[in-house]
Length: 293
Image 1 (cartoon, rainbow, N blue to C red):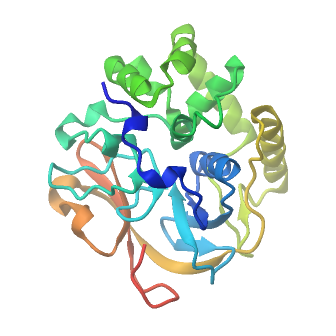
Image 2: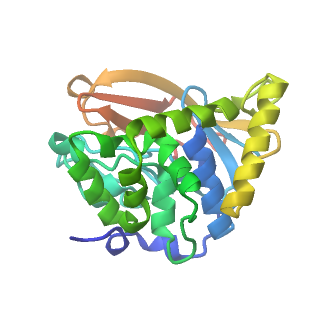
């Protein structure tokens, strides 16, 4: 069986003049922070699927590495499913297990269902190791509900993906030791401390909540987590500015909407179950007057 490391694009080994663009949930944030720690690339951009891409440095023209964003063009690391058929134009610069393994649409349930966060640990395992503490490994497996695939009839596929990314020895014993209910309760406790999503407030700053108590609790949780994992995890500080208008297209049947990989104005898309796809499209040119991802 081939391994993830056999199929990675060369750019992940290079020292690029790049910045990081992240999505707006816990997987996007923690993955961006981990990648930034490993590579030194700053997190400057945040994409809201409903409004657009926002940046702390709106005039910065450095290359962007997208994290937890299923984009059909450009370098990035992502965990979503994007293949409509054998004719889909897969993004060869995107590190995505489902793309790497070329899993077809009619075998959707073979997909990699764990987080982008776990994937980054797998990509850079020569530079950083997963934590040893059982509680931290459980936390990592709750991101994007990454544990769920182990506890259903597709367990074989889940373990196959663990083998493919090279983290079976580290993560399988934790799954074998605990029940689905253990993870659900653990995830619930995390959500009581930190909301899953964050957003831009009216001043253009990223926050978990307009409620100061909720915001403070989330920040305190991330401070403790940063200390335990050994790298900083926090929302980027600074004022974000809109640099790319996006329109969320909602959820549609795959058969009705067709293969989005061929549509130039599609910014990102993900097949979210066996019959539907969610997407966001560019509705105007960016600040440089171009339809570029």
